[in-house]
Structures are given as structure tokens and as C-alpha cells.
Image (cartoon, rainbow, N blue to C red; front, side):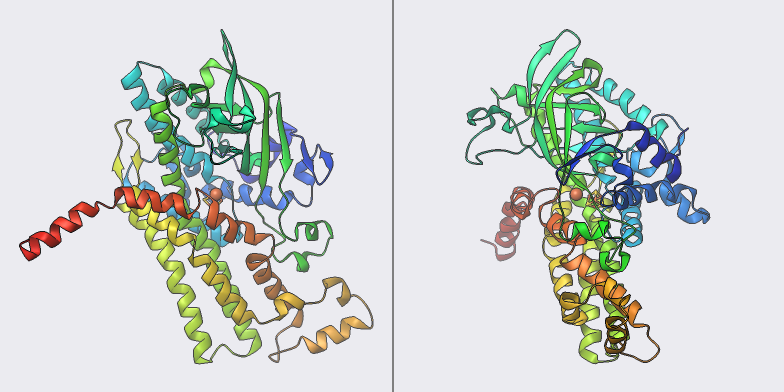
Length: 483
Ligand code: SF4
Ligand code: FE
């Protein structure tokens, strides 16, 4: 069955029975955990799109597989044209503006598109069989409509030292044993977006490896319920509000992100799941291609979340009775301008995409890096403007529970009433949503991830410098001036 619905997806994750360490406790039924459930629901949304009642919208979410010819979810697609790349960004904006958070499923899609082309090129050079293995693996992902995490970021220990120079060699994930039927790996991957909501993961090196670092130049796929994997749940600002059973205080009680520290304690990887093993010169290509795809992704998802923040800011201005003030309108326009610039870069790098020898399409890397560098800045300015227009209440609002108290409840309702006819409770909900995105649990995806996800700003600056063709610009000046 190529297209699951959200219920089937949730049931399939429950059936995996993954265990995780959450706030000091081992949790077995994590899908029911109040801190985790919203993140599962955010991924589940991506299974509803292909079944949307609107046939036009459905087209954005379901697409014909290049491997099987079947209709599949776009999240498992290998992009076959620049239109596909553009539709990917549009889809991400759609889900971002539906959930107001990270819906986690893009990492595997980006890892797959990078691994598909890199394995092909590696096979051409080395006579290896990685590409065929990857096709087999990905065909199953498509036909079973699986969620795949992309695991890249190693802990890295002392940043001034190479992997092999670390006091603790496990700071970079590596092969520790070779068997006839596969390899055994040890290490950890940090910041694993949506790992517990995934069926599978693609593990990649974290940086360009050099000769002598072969045991670190490894790429493979693993089911998330493999033996030897340990999951430690990441905390987010105000996350325990989710366990208080007070949805107003959470801000966005339906959806949320998920970040997990993943430990590989001597995990066995069968040969048919290995897609790179020691080909150091291809490790950098895998890292860069994955990073470029994910930098494109942010032009979609972050502008979608930006839609929610802009909408909430415009609404609170209205609820406060200041929406007609010229400076308020101008600040909203500024927010829209910044947000659409993010989206424009995501669309631009897609429209300038090109085909790799393996057949799938890749974005223009320079423009994808410009896209992500903007993402490291603009959401912060959007958050600043939202904080400005929302007013101090996003930092001082009483608890929702105090609304139930016979003495304080009426006071809160009376003194939080602004424009006549606006329910003060609705006003509290909008303020809490803004709080969620600018300083609460939602700020992890909207701000911290905008800075560091797919690499920090310096990583984009390095790529921009490398691809800017500064010499050509100088030559043009020389030619213009006849120098
Ligand atoms: Fe997708 Fe954005 Fe989350 Fe990355 S941060 S997984 S691109 S929603
Ligand atoms: Fe991310």
C-alpha cells in the first residue's frame, strides 16, 4: 500500500514499540506521552495531504514514483524536475502554516535525494554496488510510505581536532568491527529531528573525511527499532506545560517538534543496508548535497511557520485595537516582506535546479545557501516585531488555571478585556501562541533550528564564498573599464 493515512501511520509507529529516556524515566508508550504526542501529530499531518478532498491540493502531496510508477507521498519522492523541487517547497510551506512547527519528515527526503545521486557517482568511480542497494531500500520506503530520519550530526568532541585525534574515538560515529555479513558501528547522532516518529533512519558522515579516516566515512540505513540503539529525549523551553493539561498555556497544543539524542551502542548493519564504506572522497559530497537540500527546505517550512506568526501578530493587533495604526501596519508589512523573501529563495534555488547523472534533480547550491543564511536572520527579526506588537503580556500572562478560580477568574477576564466583543480568553490564546513561537517550545524549531539546522551561518558563508565566482565579477569590471 503506497499511501498511508494518518491513522495508519500512527498505528505503525505504535507497533514499533520504541523506548526512550524522557525526563529521567524510561518511556515505552511514547506515542501517548503528552510531551511527545504533539510531535507525532505534526508528522501525521503529512499523511493526510495526499488524501485531501481538493484534487488540486492533492497533486502537491502525491506524485508518481520514478522507481515503481506507483502514486507515492511526495515526502518519499526522488525529484524528477525543477517543478518537483518547487512543489517540495510549496508543500513544506503548506504544512508549516498548518502546524506552526517542525513536521520532521523532510530530513529523510533530503538525505535520500543526496544518497541517491552520490551512490550512483561512487559506483561509477569505484565499481561498488551502493546505488542498487539504495534503490532497493528506497523502493520499500516508497511503497510502504515510511518516515525516515536523516542522521548526520556527530557530537564532534574537541572541535579543534580531527575524528581520529579525539581523546574519545566515539565522538564521531565509526565502524568498530567488520563481519562477513555487515559492519558494527558505534557513536552518537545529536539533534535528531523526529527520530522517535520514524520507521527508518539514513546515517551519514558529519563532515568531509580524509584519507586515513575511512572508518568514519560510512553511510547506511537502519530500522529505528534495531538492537543497540538508545534514545534520549531533548528538552524544549516550557515543554512541561504540555503535561499540565492546560492547552491554553501551551500556545500550540496540537502540534510540536521533536529532537532526540541517538546512541549507537555497537549496532549491527547488514551489508545490503550499507551505501558508503570508506570512500572518503564521496563523504564531502554527501554532506554538501544533503545540506543544500535541507537549506532549500527551510525556505518552505520556516516561511510556513512565519505565516502563523504573522497571522497571530495581525490578529493580536486587531484584538488590542491598534491594527489601523500606521506603524503597526508597516511592521506587519515588514514581517511579510521578510517572510516572502525566505520563500522566494526556496523557490529560486529550486527553479535553477539541474539533473544529476543518477537522474534525480538537485537545487542550485549557491541560492540554497543564500536561502538558509537568510533563515538564520529573518525569523529573529520576525520574532522581534511580533514581540513588539504583542506587548508585554506575552511575558506576564497569568496561568489558564487561574481562570477557574472564583476570585481571580473574573478579575482576569475583566482586566484582559480589550476591544469590545473580543473574548479575553481568545486573546490569551493568541498571546500564548506568539509566546510559544518566540520564547517557548516552538522557538526551538522557529529560531534555534533556523540558526543551526542544516548547519550554522558560517557553513553557509563558506559555501557562498566557494561558489560566488568572485573572479568573474572582477573580470567583468576589468572588461567594463578596459583595464
Ligand atoms: Fe522539515 Fe523544516 Fe522540520 Fe527540517 S525544520 S524537518 S525542513 S519542517
Ligand atoms: Fe531541521
